[in-house]
Length: 337
Image: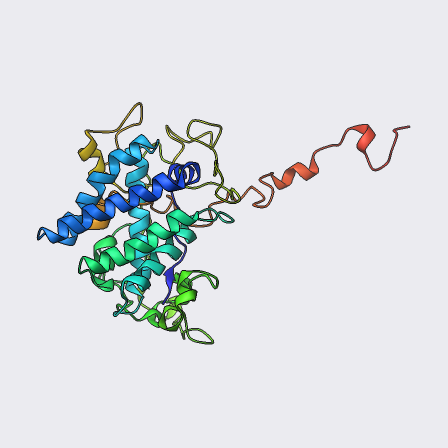
């Protein structure tokens, strides 16, 4: 199997909340999964089940300091990242396999160098089994998670008619520029078999040989920032906390993305001073119910690495700082004569 590239980024508010209290975040995921399964058991479809999941998780996330806009954004990103991977995953994937895809996708959405805490990884794995127990197949679940083919945020190339050029379960049909393998040390690698590319990789067609283009990225809602530069491991604080000195252009909450529009209605509108999110641009179930779930690509093109191109990912310092004049006593020439 393969994942889309570049991967959507996780909203910074989500990253901060995970780092601040992994156990509480894991519990929120578990509570949301119970709501999903309950809705399916009551005869609902996957769309209504995702809506129920978001309705339950939204207030919990709000209590953790996550704005409705950021939670909304997280739903779009989660749907694109996980849905794209599941679309290219094996059709017969069961709970453990789907859990591994979710685990790898979410870890790939974090800032480079950031590790997902164990309790959250376990909860993400349990989500895969929960989806399987609710009767969801891998490819049907992928279709519910992603926007419709051709719409903003759809993670795979589409032809001129707006149809996805990658058949479900055929990662080799995806142009090499549009996909990437699971991490070599991730959950899918632990599963082995069809969860990883064959030795030597797939024989991907080049993008320029196909009559296809990538759909545009989704725009993040106002006041939401995507995950910032690498923040090391997920300690008590992973990245700048809400309201601290993050991106000077960031809006309230210092978050990222555009995704969980249904949550806004469920919670009665945006909170605090955050501006209202734009109307939903898609009617896919994951975008609206986990439309209540996890985050979209940044505006303006590709979903590149989370770090600022002007920053050194290792140090967080502008490379230009090396060119700053040194005080006389530190100058290589010694004392100034």
